[in-house]
Length: 385
Ligand SMILES: Cc1cc2nc3c(=O)[nH]c(=O)nc-3n(C[C@H](O)[C@H](O)[C@H](O)COP(=O)(O)OP(=O)(O)OC[C@H]3O[C@@H](n4cnc5c(N)ncnc54)[C@H](O)[C@@H]3O)c2cc1C
Ligand code: SF4
Ligand code: SF4
Ligand code: SF4
Image (cartoon, rainbow, N blue to C red; front, side, top):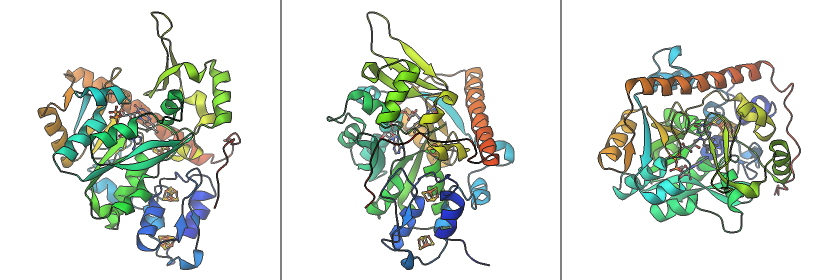
């Protein structure tokens, strides 16, 4: 039987527009052989740069989140006892938490919990570094390694040549090259923060036992209903459509919808809620072909949905994740809001509803693939060299 390889990914994943740009194929391939495939433009699928060097080994095909070849193995490894565990994954416990460190709370998207945990693990030398994301320039983010609190704060901080409003928007903007970045940190013990598609790919690599996944100690997965793509044109369109000016935006969060907090006018603060279905023009098409909302293969998953403002919803899934959450709560690094059993059930129900919605959107999209969806043209020029 012919082993499927990168050419098949082009045909089955890139051409139908469902490449999630997780970067997994590039990460693995470039670990073994430089310059076969590359992902210079983070807004397009990877490309062959030296097709004749391709070994046709097929690993890129196996680990791609859109081929689903390893789903069965992963479900077994991550305790999915039956199909009913999908689309929520295995849950040990659910918490609503907040950082006790004022700096992490202040810069946190929600409760500053992810950064607080990473900082604790760095201080205790459980990890050597964490791959996180930072704003690079307008409309682009990049992965970076954080080795201490200063790095974490710098990565989350404002980029001085960009407006604070654009920095806010970019928290949820497009793909971050975390996986290709991994290969630069071989032999280090790493934590990786990622969206569900990125975590899935890492788990596939670990399941295959391939580099550069062997040095990943911990997968910290974010909830993700969809990822956005904003450029100059889309920002103008968005402002018109939703009757707001980005210069007046103070904070942006995503929970069960997009939440935009405008700057205080007198004593009142205006908060605008925009449902996901109203912002299809600003999302990436590949996200429609994604069924995982809560990072089901992470050690610990984090999101805003289910918690009040400035708290993070935390789901523990693996033994490693359970131990770490216990330790950070006991050490006072994060505080856990005391939840009654009924509140936990309500949180789970709400999250489960969104998992279901995302799964249904995925199934519908795959049935009618590419018939109706069309992205507006880009204003941003990207060098292709
Ligand atoms: C694209 C995207 C979509 C999301 N969608 C939802 C949603 O629909 N519903 C919901 O409830 N929550 C969603 N979230 C999660 C939510 O916005 C918060 O990230 C989460 O609650 C953790 O908040 P925190 O304050 O504890 O994290 P913080 O303490 O602020 O730490 C977040 C850390 O994650 C890193 N990071 C952020 N994005 C990336 C990335 N793409 N790759 C690598 N590192 C990254 C940051 O650099 C930082 O170190 C989404 C997040 C992202 C990035
Ligand atoms: S060498 Fe292997 S991993 Fe790299 S592109 Fe070719 S088939 Fe994919
Ligand atoms: S592994 Fe990721 S980047 Fe590569 S083709 Fe698949 S979805 Fe796209
Ligand atoms: S919805 Fe989120 S996890 Fe899914 S492909 Fe888009 S960015 Fe990745």
